[in-house]
Amino acid sequence: MKKAQKILSESKKYRIDVGLSNLAAVKGEGCYLIDVDGKKYLDFHSNVSTNNIGYGNPEVKEVVREYSKKGIYKVDGTLTILEEALVLAKKLSKHLPKNLRKSFFVNSGAEAVENAMKLAYLKKGPLGGVSVKGAFHGRTIGVLSYTSSKAIQKKFFPVLPHHELDFCGEKGYCNFRELEDLISRELTPAFVIIECVQGEGGYRPLSKEFVKYLRKITKEHDIAFIIDEVQAGMGRTGKWWAFEHYNVVPDIMATGKSLQVGATIAGKKYDMAKQERGALGSTWGGGHVIDLAVGAKVIEIIEKKNLVKNAERMGDYMLKHFKEIQLKYPRKIIDVRGKGLMIGVEIDSVKRRKKIIDGAFKNGLLLLGCGEKTIRIAPPLIIDGETADKGIEMIEKLIKKY
Ligand SMILES: Cc1ncc(COP(=O)(O)O)c(C=O)c1O
Image (cartoon, rainbow, N blue to C red; front, side):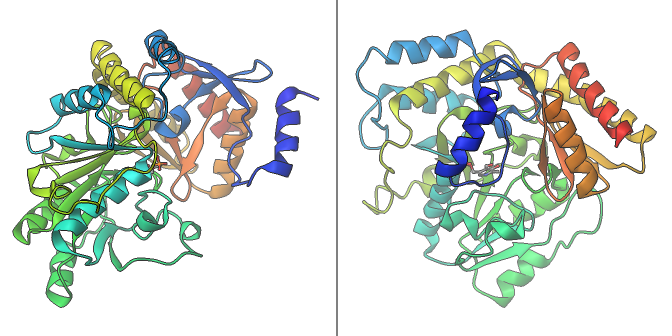
């Protein structure tokens, strides 16, 4: 029996099985993950978009090596003064509009969103919040109320007062009165939260007019406008932040994944933690010293290697190829959309999508679904034409076969 198989079957006794991949990964190089038996997998979803700079980067390895000598590890930058937190905040602010200067570093994306919501609540009190249907903002109990990419995600759990606006994409009908109607009918919400490009909901960009409408109404009613950049941020869409495609600036944003730590970022107006001491605090070890240093190195590598530009260039290249494949198989592929290296290839049925994803895994290509029947295409931002072609050709073969 192969080692991967052995680990998987033994894990069944010890692991709370959430039913995801069968990959027993042990190391990574560039766009590839390698399993315990040495099998190489081309990772076309960057470990759910957490690895924009690719695997095994020597500069990141060096940072981790350096910190192994220092003797501090789970020390965080919210309770302790750490230069690493200052360096990371300054690096982030270089790529952000002026009103977004103040950072709060935590462990995960969900916590970053939770703290964004908390900043909004600190200003407006415990009112309801508004999200968009199909959104994913994390799995902790607080943010789960605003997550709706799959019904099962919150089927068993209690929810906070909230309202879900109808999704408004680049095609189809949009309701441009829903938020105002809600405000006139009920209490003003504490915040409106969106992902400019929905991730888990199916790699679906919101319409420009809709995002602008939400920004306008939130400004008029002094409601915090939160943008979740946990998946779409850090260059993935061909810009540092997805909101740059929309010419809007949020009051508060959340990011994470590729940044290595979760980050809540706000302007002075929402920097309320000082007035309300104790309302906000670290989860222990959140945004710890090594992850802060790695996060800063990740930003440096994205800058140095021009990866945001590469995401735009390679995103255009891959989108064009998938649109060509769609023309050959219009019955099997019903939509191709996206921004930069955040591309959704929507298949006509859940069954066919499963066959394609399983077939890809057998052939050493990691694909992941999103939305109801979409395949997400989100390779590391370092990808080149030759590597992209390998994955695209395999996907085309599988679409032809199934
Ligand atoms: C848009 C978005 N927000 C929040 C989260 C939660 O991040 P984490 O898994 O780090 O808690 C995710 C994770 O997929 C996400 O895609």
